[in-house]
Image (tube, rainbow, N blue to C red; front, side):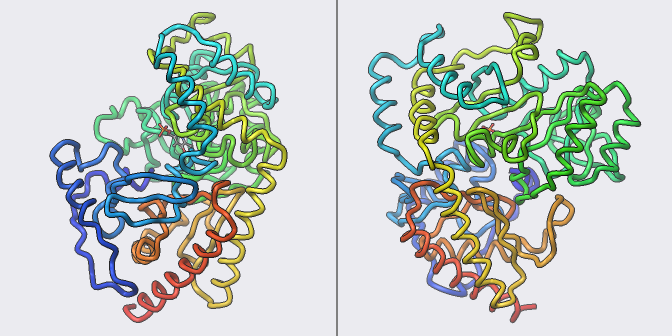
Length: 459
Ligand SMILES: *Cc1c(COP(=O)(O)O)cnc(C)c1O
């Protein structure tokens, strides 16, 4: 999503160049719908990265999804690796989720009063997640993070938050900040409408840099309420951190009575049932969830120890509420999805399948000497058009996105759907069978051949 922030104000129109591979798929209906959408919504969309600003053509308007497949308004079929940006770990239109949602819907859509469904989902999570003791449901990842930050500030009675350059935490005001110049900086706003005074409560440091974190703690002694990091940073490329770095964050925060927040909106229920925290075997103080938790419906959550959570209203002084929080239909989707994830071997099978897929592509790429690395963790993957190691935002060469742009077009022409930005990761779902992964692999390889032939000629 960070890429979308950079592109949000850019109005450059893409002029497709002649195709380097297969002829472009028809996008007539999508283009028509997009024209109409532009008269209703800013940029024609309700979330910026959907607008295809960093790839060729107009956005595809989706008609339906089933399993690992998507169909657009022009009837084109795709194997989908965007998976609604992560939530669809079981694929599209999973029968168990559809049935549960349909059943619960018959009794009404919202009551603004507690239901047993909230208990049911909470129990499924808390019984199988030893990192948190209490949870609060909200309606998006952004809301979860916003609430977690308020909780950390209320609990510690401190104001400053330390975040990392290249981590995205939703469109929370105080986190829509980027690093200024220098190792440890006050944030500079990365969106209009965020007062500089808000950004000044946020300290931004590079990922994978202990010295910068140490320096920030020395400089702002006793002022930092929380350090927030994505479980595995996966919104600005896939920036896999060394375990020692995460361990250091745990140590330094404990030493300074600062809370450690893992934003697991992408990694939660993805790397394993207990997310990145279990993957690193590190216990954060607060964890945020979203995406997978709602099974495709809008659900977010934050959780912590009972002691920290007792600061939340009505038990404590930190206010947080929601008209549609714990919505029964959304809870139903979450219950059905989480129940599937708890089946024995679920993550082992999924992660193995994803690993074989990414490794086979990496082998091909290495054999051809292409400047490309396939980063992956669990069932998350990212194609980095570089031969350098990438562990922080600054390692990514913006020029490499030109290659992604060509790649994306060739993929669409071969029936493969990736999120429309080279900064975004892809996901393998349980619905991707070996047959489809093999088909996808062949299309990816063909596309890479074209991208590298094309760019080596033109450079
Ligand atoms: C997607 C995401 C968010 C924002 O969640 P929304 O549901 O889009 O508001 C926050 N943090 C991380 C790590 C995310 O991946």
